[in-house]
Length: 510
Image (cartoon, rainbow, N blue to C red):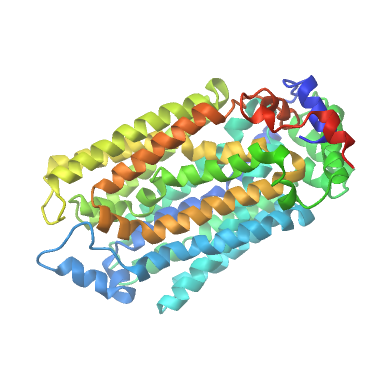
């Protein structure tokens, strides 16, 4: 943290200003966290729709022809560039939107950006439901992507800035919790609409308007964050917003003073947030903005979530069985996210990262062994039912371990480690990396599965080992540390401490 905010970090790293969990802060954070619904719904709906015969016959008949072949490579049935473009185009649009959103947020606030995200997602859902060709599908997906890019940039930072420091982890994981709810709802919708012969896919895509309406209503009912209001010179509104969420017994004036001091320090060294984050004293912030979201995608969970029905069909389940497997997977992920919400502020971030990483490695290696021994390298062998159930069970355990670790914590860490002067830019970079990696992985996963066969899961297991080692070496524990005091955590770190400038040096800069 620059300037006075950094000095506070060194002096009082454990101050919480007497804030408590009030009814107002719970409602406000739940409304903001509902932004995760649209992302989760899209993740779930995409994989299910691409497994529906009515959707494939309308837009991707070549996939159906390969499915009908007498002899087929199970790994390569769904390898279609057009099909993956349908899924991945959203994330390319989201990447661009998240970078724009970081600048817009500083000008109009977090709340307005969430409103814009909900409106764009609503428009995209309408276009997709009415699509008559692939071009309309792609345009609709891009509108959805713009909505997700805006919402994913604003909502996690809103939660981090609003939640009491002691419970910030639990509140910020609310974004992942709503993402999991959206994912489970989408899988249930897919399972139901798959029985509608010709237009079930339209219903699945069109119902994306429902979570968009939720985030629109939620954003209309909540105030902007105190930090965002102070940045825009609205100090009295910031005081009122802070008193509303902290309660009457909190030392609102002290917290607001620290927020204002941090904002003034940022303005004193204003040179553009994106340029500033590249400076040496922010090396650790840039590393987290890039590494944490990138590693989340390299767990392989996003492709499992998107293509769960496809994966389960490859493993030997029928179409309906594959969709039900995706429902089970979504329910497991929701349950584990609830567990993370209950434990993240008790045990800390690092223990959840490490245990989740270990379990994911074991599950992916086991799935690779089963698929290699049962389907083989040519992909033409059928998998026995007990082994198919084992793949489902292992995928569920994998999803659970992700749900208590890299799933929610990827939204927690970037939202809480950035100082106020680069917070919007840092979160924008984090979301852009997340969506950019998602685009690349969803665009290439089916081709990778076709080329690497069962070794695809070994590939992801190796990445989980790398990211677990990264957490051990480079990620400090941030449990219970106020945002304005986060700088002291980096000062004490064995590696990042060499990049952090002392507060006096920062204050002396011209």
